[in-house]
Length: 431
View 1: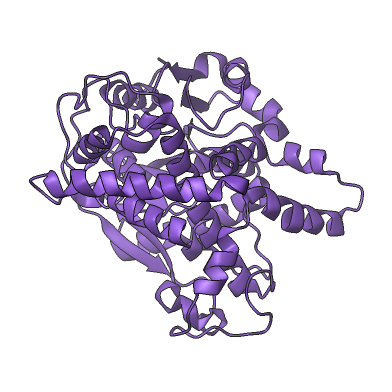
View 2: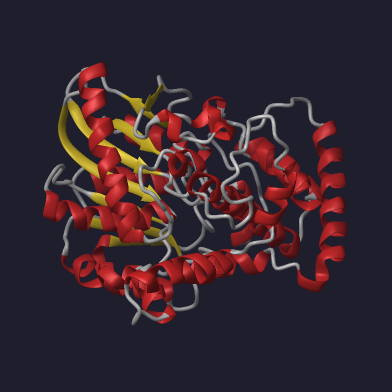
């Protein structure tokens, strides 16, 4: 747990800006940043967009699952949480879905909320189905995030429930509906859009996939490898110790303890992280999200994978042992030991290759090619895409795709060109 504890301190610091994020008008760096640096600190080679400094966010919750069915250890998660930002009058409404392991109020979500509110949208933000609060409140008897079509069905149910709630409680009037999501939330948006073609509850006007994985399995395999310690565990521990030591010195030297994208960059610039160190940080951050997901699944649905089966964990019980076991499980392990066996119980003929295809945009390629309301924006240097996958996305979306040359994975959400592209896409045209 030592590695994860150190990483958690760093990542919590890097994610703590939330609603007090400072918007800067000029780039905060002069050096060319790699895709890994952009992913960690944000893309800094162009000016930030002029976005609202703050938003009037209404943090909301909804009861979906009987409270007595939720484990005591999740006492703080006994309702599904989401947020609403409303315009003063009737307006179009957009749903935003968070990326892997992220909540409705994460920093990346806040950037998107600002962009769409500034465009005149009501904004409803939902956590990822891989986020613990979402998992804990799932009514399903054995919820297993990662099946994109299944996730989409449940997200669609939640969207209907929260839309009904905000109409009743907040008097929101929607002129139309749109949908977007980043990273895994981008892939979810594609599958939700297809589902809505059948259900026609929202009849989305526009759908934007932001930095989506082409193949969920391929992308998480990349991230798993960044934290594949193997026989290099002692070297990784030493690397974390060195990063944390340099980070602490830089943090102590700054004038303010406030964290925003600019100050985070300054800290990491002074720390001068190498590519290997950046990969380790990215991989460890993903492993933390994955561990939280696996722990929430295990406890909520009594799988007995990392906790004692049929044991009800109290809110005062130590979780160290269980979380350490969860931290040793890769997404590949989760896929092979949980997702694949479950799919094969339903259909004995299904293979691993079949399942990998199902959990990808390839599975709905014909729909994505034909639909003129679905758009894509990503970066040529997105670290979660394998060789050839950017070209695949371009071939599927053609003139509905915008491929920025740089920005890493979701590193340019607050940059001027990205925000201008969102404006162009949603206010009546292509790039």
